[in-house]
Length: 238
Image (tube, rainbow, N blue to C red):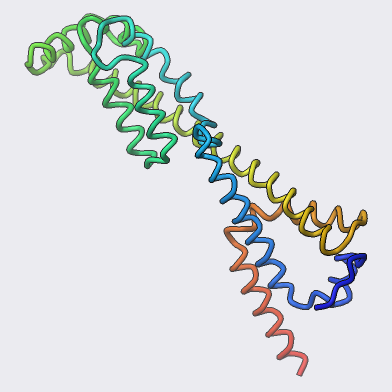
């Protein structure tokens, strides 16, 4: 395909100079995939975009962790946060991260912090203290205290679920936004250097960059659909 540098890419599409629309869709999808890959490589710089969203986890668990930090627990607030952030940056499975956060806080329950944690979870402080004391002594919680433990666990689970879901949503949105910005820059640089500088080309490659990231996961399917449609149209013409 011969393209003069001053040609409008939109005119080329309308005139049939870019004959294979499916290839164009595939190329745009590849641009989106490459942009997401470039964004992902920035994780080597102190976690890069993976840091997005962890603030929701810190804020959500802060009341529980502050209560734990008020005593001499061997695995206190800062150690728990370091462990959870390590898993978050490494992209561990979300259910595993939630389970670990829950386990670490439950393991930190002790007679010294039972009253503070009971206040956070709005459970009976006396019952939770008795259960924590039984755990510290190596025994099982009495039947009348199991309700407080179950309520504490339910509240903790709900808080962790909300924190991780909101954090994950922010991370995914931030990563997609960064990838979209990268796509626009790459699209403009490559497109303008090949097709020349014009307002039409500027707008076209801006739109191309904006749709590249959301198109990437379905580019092959769209390209296949276009090829099928073209083949069908050719058969019907005969």
